[in-house]
Length: 384
Image (cartoon, rainbow, N blue to C red; front, side, top):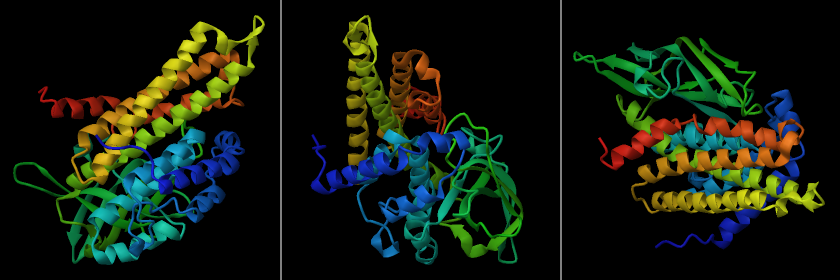
């Protein structure tokens, strides 16, 4: 069996990110959430800390670390604030990831250094108003004409794509339709400055309020033929591989969020006095805390094993889906107990319990719903 003890380097990274999150993010997380404000200051500091391009080669400005190290970063950020964790997770998994794994050397040299170390963000244009879990139902199309791709369509719920740091987006688009009606899907690079590309920030969200989420509109957006990412027709495969890795980051957000909610619940239940005793001393509450702690440890073991498999170059898709659905749902149960243990105060936004409860919900939906994860796992189990 693999040894999941963290290396000295990983422990240093964990402690460094935890210290940053406690000192820099925690004091402002609720205010940023209330204002629905994306923080350029915090994002810049996370760049300075080297939290973007964690697994990317130093050749392109990255840190060259293993995937578990990256997951530890996301976990520690999410322990304090899912919004800042989302900025980093999307920046690495969905922004940098496709360019790093599928891009040509020229594309990597052009686009990766700014995304790793020059405070630029990149989006992954997959979801559309009528194409979420059914990603193959995408309508956005790209026509190749005179050496140029002409892109038309729209995307929605795209992280990091409508702020002053946004540099561009990798767009999944239909590039052909075969005689049998099957769509050819490809990924194409579009810079933010492209004429006809409009990015609109989405507000009034229940969750991840200080994370930047965008609607993107493509009106005859024209880019060079060389902006094709990888091979023509490989877009769907690239998307699936990107989401496999991204699910580990979403799982890390669930794990970190659960840890943070648990710590808030434990702290409050020790301080809150009822009937002359801390409410943590009542068996019914103590058992809730025990269940939370146990499930968090189980979730961490499952996620770290999935990361170990990826770092070993072994198949990890099933374990990534398991980690994503389990860590997300553990976070729900812990956040629910956290609110319950706070009583009426758990319903008040000045307490972090409410934010943990709200932020959890996105993890059941983003990068493949819990229902889709179960479908993926069922296929690995030959249920169908």
